[in-house]
Length: 379
Image (cartoon, rainbow, N blue to C red):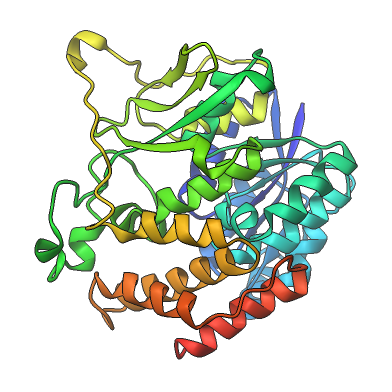
C-alpha cells in the first residue's frame, strides 16, 4: 500500500487525487493532507479519509479546524513550518505536491530530505529551484514522478528507452481558450473569458496561465530539469484536441507519444502506482469519434508568455523565479480585475528587465528574488 501525504488537497489536482484514492482503497492510503484555509472542505476530507495529520497554511484556519475536529484523533500543523513538518512524518512514503506557487519548494525539499518519493504537480518547484531539487533527489535516491499530463506523457514515452537516445521532446499544448486570436482581439478579454478552457478542468491560476501560454513556458522549464535536456531539445506544438499529451523523438527519427482523453486522473494514478498500471473506469479514447488530430505552431508574438519563458530559462539563475513571481502577481491582479489580460505580459517583461540576475541562487536567494519582484511590482 502506498501511503500518501497530499499537499493541496482542496484544489483541482488534490480533489482528483482523492478520487483516485477513493477508487483504490486497498492500494492507496491518505496519511496526511494539507491546504490553505478551506476549513469546511478539509473537515469533510478528514472525516472521509481519516488521515493522521493535517496542515493548514493559514494559522487561523488551523485553529478553527482544531475546534471542528475535536472529536477526531488527528494532529494539526499550521503555517509554512506545518507544511514542512507534515512532509517529514515517518509513516508515509510518497508526497504528492499539488499546491500552486513557490510555497511548494520548502515542503518538497523537506520531503526529499526525509527520503520520500515525490509525485510532482507543483511546477514552480523545478522552475525556480530545479538546480537544487534534482541533485538533492539523486543524492537521497528518491523518485520524482511527474503528475502534469504533459510531463507524465514524456515520462511514459521514455519508459524503457535509453536516456542518451532522446533527440527532442515534443511538448503539446491545447492553445487555451484564446487559441487563434490575434493580439488586438485579446485587449478586452475578461477573467470569465480566460477561464473557459476548452478541454481541461483546472484551477483558475493554471487555466489563466494556459490562456497566456505562460503555463507552457513553465512546463518547458520544468521539462528541462525533469528529463535533463537543453532548451533547444524542447519543441512546443499546439494540439487543440488535447489527445496527444506529449511525445518524444529519438535519434533514429522514431516518435513515441502518449495519447488519451483529457483527464488528470490518469497521470495522477500513473504516478501513484508507477511502475504498475491499474484499471480505471474513466472514458476511453475513441478514434472513430475523434476522427482527426491537428497541429499548429504556437503564436509567440500574440501569446508572449511562452517567448518570455524561454528568455527567462536561457538567462537562468534567478531569472525564472522573477518570471514566475511576476506572473503569479499579474494573474492575481487580473483575477481581481485590477489589470487587463495583456498587461500580464507587461508585468512579467518589466520585472525581468528590472532584475539583476543571481547566477546560482540558493533557496534563500530564490525566495529573496521572489520577494523583490513582488515589491517592485507593488504587491
